[in-house]
Amino acid sequence: MGEAGAGAGAPGGPEASPEAEVVKLLPFLAPGARADLQAAAVRHVLALTGSGPGRALLAGQEALLQALVELAPASAPARDAARALVNLAADPGLHETLLAADPGLPARLLGRALDPQWPWAEEAAAALANLSREPGRCAELMAALAAAEPADSGLERLVRALCTPGYNARAPLHYLAPLLSNLSQRPAARAFLLDPNRCVVQRLLPLTQYPDSSVRRGGVVGTLRNCCFEHRYHEWLLGPEVDILPFLLLPLAGPEDFSEEEMERLPADLQYLPPDKQREPDADIRKMLVEAIMLVSRSPAPQHQVGSRCGTRELVQGCRGWGRGVLIGDEPERGMENLLEVQVPEDVEQQLQQLDCREQEQLEREQERELELALAPEPWVERTTPT
Image (cartoon, rainbow, N blue to C red; front, side):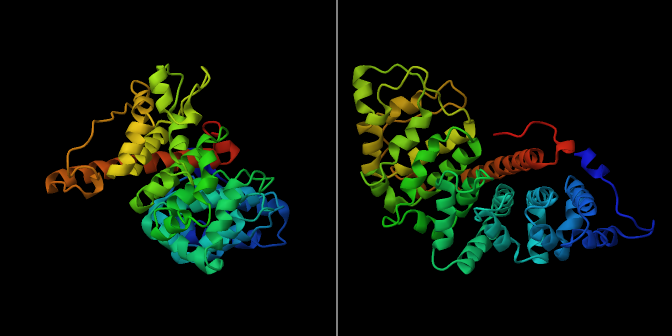
């Protein structure tokens, strides 16, 4: 992102500190500032977010952060300001500094993301998705939801916005899905999502096949995967009130040819699919789908229901040789039915944790780069924006 550092500098003497130079931008970001000067100031800020030192410089500037959030939505620089916040939030090392400088930032971004009239709500949702990836920040955002809205209505509004076509005619709101996935790390969020009296999970299920955005599909599948860690809800999830299994299996289905006997064992929604049926193309989403199926079948009764009655083995095995392979074992030994309760040797656990940490760090780096490239201004985009 070397080009991002080439933005026009603010006027000032050669001995002025970088912090002082940034402060000089504030009058040009204020309401009522001349439009062309305001646009130039915001472009300069956005250019600074294209480099690590630039992001570190901006993250501690409370007045500047507030000015970026409060820019009038109809003004030309507002979108660049929103993208600058996305880039700042994409750096996990700056989250603490960012929120210390502006503790009210998550609540204001949340208000923007859920405002059906706000044109840059997608960027606000993307910034929140970045901010909520770490457990500590996720807890703070849950607190902001609770403080901004009575009871659970904050999460309810988020789910409604995600599941309502055309909720915001000027923003697709795909990034609400990864935001919800991050929030579902919290027990309180999972309790809300899995409340049988709310009908929340049922509204999310059709989005596992959402054709227009892998971001939305991945966020919803991640949310469902996290919900499947709550083993006391497994029978309810698999039962007729939710019937989650076909929605987890259908994206994994491709143009396989099954025998009549195998076909009859599949759920009705997965039988006799058209020959041009496409499997989920994103390998990470396929992995989360398989993980959700394995989680929801980890106790003996659901294992039999998922593995035997519904022909899950045949369908998931169809993924072998297509991207990342998947192996389904035979019936587990006694005492090994619930893998989350199996005692793992300490040395093996340490090795697995190290592998998980390396994989997570690599994934975060890739996500940061994708967000920066997708939401950077046109002069600094290095590839087309993904759908």
